[in-house]
Image (cartoon, rainbow, N blue to C red):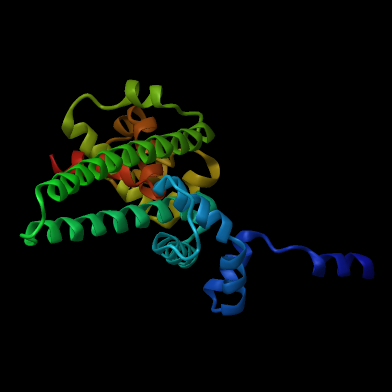
Length: 247
């Protein structure tokens, strides 16, 4: 019995338990966690910058701040791990930083009047290269996001093919389905049922929406997919939802 109690005390905390303690104000534990994940931060930043990242680089500092932000904002209820959540956040913050820097550089170029023709041409080429880099980076992040979302869909026995086939044909029908998904994700009990039981709580949803049960059932797969996007940290997929709702 004593040995079992000893083993229980020695049990290693899970990452989620560690984050919970940090969110409760454990600063030393926060510093330890950030320090131990520096290689992960550097690797994630490097995947965006396409070069080796040193801890002295500004981009690494941005990644460090983003990882700390992820720790503070992380919630297991969102359905993703801290690693997945922080990876997306780090990449997003580094891209924002690069874009901000490029804007400042562009402003300097426009104001400066003493640049030679060769320097001007070089600056324009750099701007074009950076724009091409941003496009490629966005494409890579979009692919990564879709890959991760596909893995989540599989937990609900869904696929992208299902979404294409089950997507409502009319714009009003899509908006109605998305409205149902928004109502679901804003209700803690409905969201809990969806994530834990891996099914749409249709009976409970009927109490909160004016759409018929038959319509909800017909668009079940689409509503589940939209709900998962809203719950998760999907930057590009959420832009799609925003676009549909605004049209």
